[in-house]
Length: 577
Image (cartoon, rainbow, N blue to C red; front, top):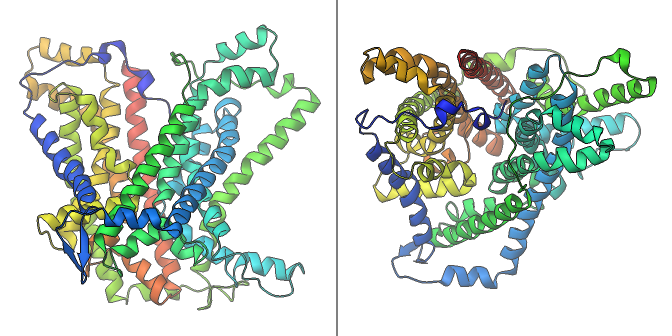
């Protein structure tokens, strides 16, 4: 998880520019206009319209904003949403920072495994993770069963689920991996020579952390916080499943305005207010995370001091730190383990203790025609999204990296904007854009919506890989008489093939797990996550546990393959350069 940007070789910092390599500039502009600029302009424009008798009237008006200005309930709900997501991201950073510090600065053996174990839950179905918490906190869940069994409670309590606290807890669970990845990347890159210089100057361990480690890692803490905040602030799945009435968040209100209420201008106005509020919060966070100076070098963490040199007291502290380091891992994996365990429970009631072992819930899946159709549809959507996104991302990466796009840095960030938009808002803007060109709901509309956020993820992976290449390789190929196409086939493509395949696998995982965007676009053609979502809302069956287990295993395999391909290619390039 090394910081890719800081590892750019000097020969690659100024990439070789192919003025006649390929006319890729216009597709980048077209993608930006069609899937980024126009949808967001439509959202803003729709917020200034009004409705009459359930129909949108094209009459410019600020009625929706005036309604929001006068609505104390909206203001309270917006502040509640921002505060809950802010608190969850802050707690996630507080938990992730010691984990990342221990993994980056203390652990030396099996470090990559420990890091991967934190990342894996990030890519396992969001529905699976949230639903697992509902089983833990529910009236018949493991927490109530433990408290009743131990005599703390006389009867199961309803106080753990469908509350604001249950939403905060689940948001924190979602936030930890995002915070960890960003913080670990920064801590691992701090040269130990800076730590030694501070210690040689007489600074204590706390002073060294305060004046050296913390300032250098603070920007990455802000990035991790921002990612966690973005993932939760527009989420309407988690509040719906574990929040109930007391846990209502602004995302649920926005979704209802585009659904049951059928008041698109008002929903658009709420979405615009949410985006502006999120922008202000993130701007303040990134401002607070600024640090003077730039960290250069790639020394990384120094090997840990051997145990033979540690005093007995420090050995005890080291053991306690190792024990504390495992607690967040238990927090991350306990819900997933319970979900898998319940998939083998021989009872239709999701309660503890278990009634016995069975495979009948897995057998039921093979006989469920609607579920199998949803699986087929998910595969069609996933493969189509990956194909479109991978081809586009590869072409865009070459266009941006090799100077075929004017203002390349701007478009690099602009294309990634859908990744930074709260899920509920992104779903709405995609509905508005596809509605404008009269794309019917279903597979095609879903492909368009998912490609808007899958393509930027693949693009960032491929761009990062291109920037690690030594530009001298291409120069040598062309000096040897190869043309542009031959240089691409024999030099460039083999060097980035792992990143392309890894990005494609990651994109498929994102597509297969998406709910917040797809729910607005799929209509009567639900993908598997939407089918499961409907099952949990209107008639839960224990076979959902079996579905989640299979999806989790599939996501795990895809991520392991993705990690191997991406980072094997990265290490190989580092070695060759």
